[in-house]
Image (cartoon, rainbow, N blue to C red; front, side):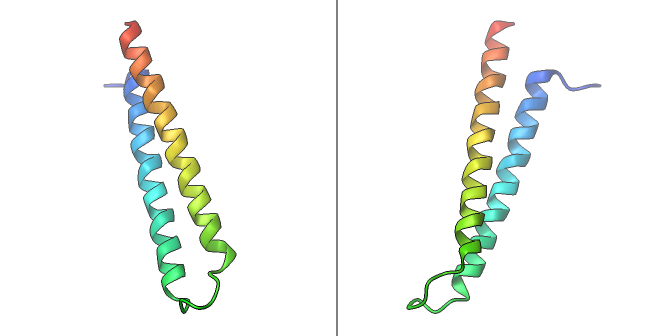
Length: 72
């Protein structure tokens, strides 16, 4: 059975959240390898920014799915 568009948006949102958590985990792993008195590598900030962007897109997709469901 094919997914309806709101269902697809919700599933995509879940996948983006999972990917974002992976980025957050990678940022934490990389940061943990550096002594506290040294700056973390720029990749840590990049992973955190990527995670935030993915979470932002996931929230927008969820909102779109809700509005679509309310309209039907």
